[in-house]
Amino acid sequence: MSAPQAASIRFIKRDLQRTSRKSHPSSGNLMILTKPSSAPQPSGSEDWPAPPTTLMHNRLTNIDELLKSHQRALCLSLSLLVGIISLFEPLAAHAIRNEGWLIPSIIVAIACFINASLAQGRCARLATHILVILLACFVTIQIGHHTGITWAFVFPPMVLFLHPIKRGIFYIIGIVLVVTAGFAIAHANLNLRDHEPFEFWASFFTVTAVSALIGRDLSTTVKAVTTVAFRDPLTGLYQRDLFLELAGHQLEVARRDKGCFSLLAIDIDNMKTVNDQSGHAAGDVVLKSVATLLNRELRGADFSARFGGDEFVISLTGVGEAQAMAVAGRLIHHAQHSEEWCAWRTQASLSLSIGIAHYPAQGDTLAGLVDAADTALLQAKARGKNQIVSAPSDDGRSAPSPGHSLVGSEMSIHG
Image (cartoon, rainbow, N blue to C red; front, side):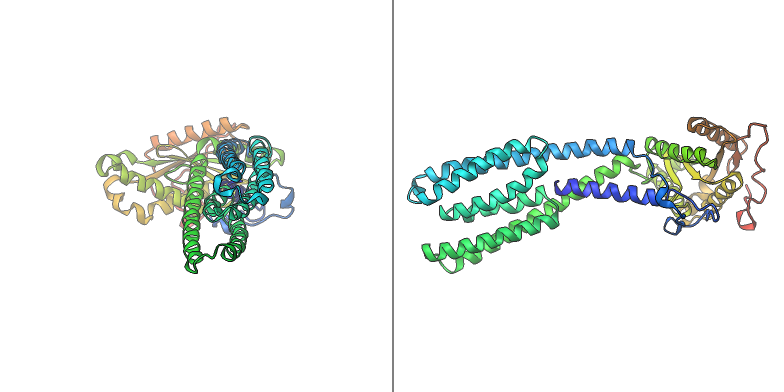
């Protein structure tokens, strides 16, 4: 597994593990507005099903396959290169005298050709490890042919591009020992000048450092690409399709356990005014501030996403109507007192309108709940914005008026 490939795998696995650990709220203490790190862990959480990762798995598989194809191509090219050189180097005019190295060279060449075939099959990962061993043997043999010092420079970039940094450093230590032994042999047989080993090591470690920096840059790039595949690049929230999959899982759990589930559709009021008067860069700042608010105020068990434009959506697992109204009220309260919105508060009258839908009152499918929350959001904006509207239940009863206190004086909304 290549260094950037391993970095992307570890990055997504950590993301999934955080999501899985926090996907089950405590029924005794909702902790509506605590930070994700303080979300309680339920008893028996080991039996709690992790969120489905079909979409994550498919996207990660595509990225993984792309990286593997480059890994196979690199391993194939290096195996063929080392094999060809190992086969023809003993036949060179200056190396004919070293007949003792002929058989080892041919053995390494054959092994490299076999390894090239492995690199194109299911054993591609094994082939990368075999290639490291073959290259170490190749350098050792080439020392006997008086060219091994030159081929040692191929080792650092090859190892650090094919393997993670820690494993690559382990392999490089091995080649350092091999080359050191080769220098001892060459110095005894060839009467090398004293300063030549120092010149070599200075160049070798320079190549190693540059290769490590490039490998780290590749890992960072792959991590960034992986993030874009799952999250909105501007806000860092989940993308719409991934959110729907995760929220669908929450709904399935609520249906199985006869629990509750709430969906909040959020829209920024007068966002167009900000874009028109201050430019889209200012609008991006507003969008990021809302994303920061959602990340700060919601539990780790809750998912949030940007549905497009200035509309956001939140899924609250294990949260009923009253608690969902409290969450919505708290979000509006903090948005109204947000420092990021101070510059536009008088200019554009920024605020949030929120529509809420609940399971099972407003539907038992995610699509139905999304439609109900969106309809409630439209009603909130039609009532004058800066409102919270809960979709009516099956019996036609609506939620409390948004002008009323939702949880206490701190939750009051004065639109």
